[in-house]
Length: 190
Image (cartoon, rainbow, N blue to C red; front, side, top):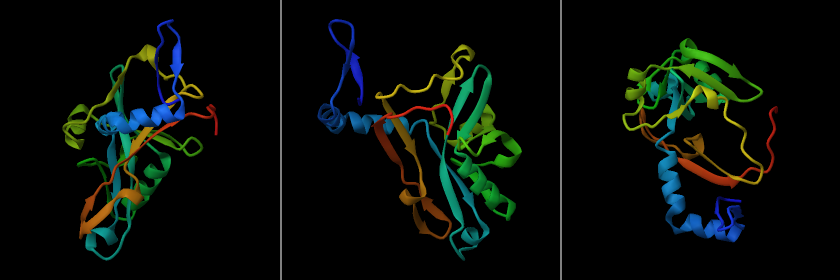
């Protein structure tokens, strides 16, 4: 299922693949892509070789931000956190969106097995990450969120290495990618 909507009898209507693809190609896919990137930022570790123009030790990934009750924090993949941390420990620096940030100093928690890391950020810093960024606001009673339903649509958005372009010394264009797919399995452990 790529999506669902109400039937006159009040039940869910499951879209077949062809209908879902038609809807996505009719402009809904572009709208979903634009909306998803309002919530997502690139996270990059700029290494000393990249900064000096002597090589490519630039690492990158994606992140988003949540506000649960009064607590504001960032979320990224643990492999992104580890790569940026390694670059920073070797003399480079990490940038979240448009803002330099030491993730190690801000780390809340991380899990190698779940490939997730969370970090603290202030409201003021978040406004410097990207002024038009939208964060997910969740009330305490809705946290943690429930897992996605098998067979229902999910979307992913981010800024991965294969989609970025180096435009010269110390200049990068972050290429965005987005996916819409159906969850085929859902587990609470890896």
